[in-house]
Length: 292
Image (cartoon, rainbow, N blue to C red; front, side, top):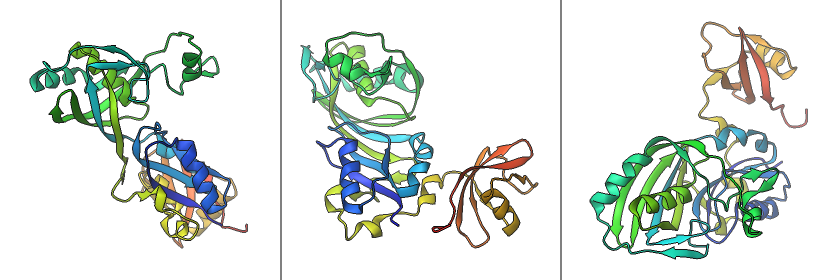
């Protein structure tokens, strides 16, 4: 059975769901899911889980992400990116690098961000972008996000390029829009590339166009790679048997104090993710050997 993790370099012009459909075709596996949506305009790292590895998607989506983005100052669009309709134009050639650097200060750290109206966030069960397309206005709740790094790479007015490392759920499009408003000229994303999700980078990513039914098996990473950022815990034979049968095992003094760990048996086989509860480890996401 084909299963595991694919680090894909998504091309522009495709949705993340388009990528999932492509991988379904080349693997012949229906059970495929991605971690961390990329807009059609965006390129770069998209993590895709195949087969049983889809059960581990939740541990990938929460990791920090790094982007390189080019922002076009002087133009505001309804989607906050170049795929949208220009709704306002203002002069921007007078903006200086010092002014940009000063304005970026307020975007670092933990901030309250207003997501774009054209987004997949749901309001009363409806994606916001569907409401926006129908011309309906709605209050979009602020969300707390963290910007770990925000660097000004180049200034070539009316365009500037930034590098951003941020928490999951951050909208780079909102940063572009809000920065444009702070500068008094407006702005939108002209180019967006995700270069990393956690420890997965574009350097190891497989260009989607090169992926086919013959080489996909060689590009798959073991599914435990999806939880490699969790502490490692080795179980003995008795502990492994208990966990696999849904029974808790005691937390010994040498066990890590984390709330979630990746567990392995004595033979080095991945058992799954187990969770701490009081003085024991409880089964959380357990994977039995194929055929059992």
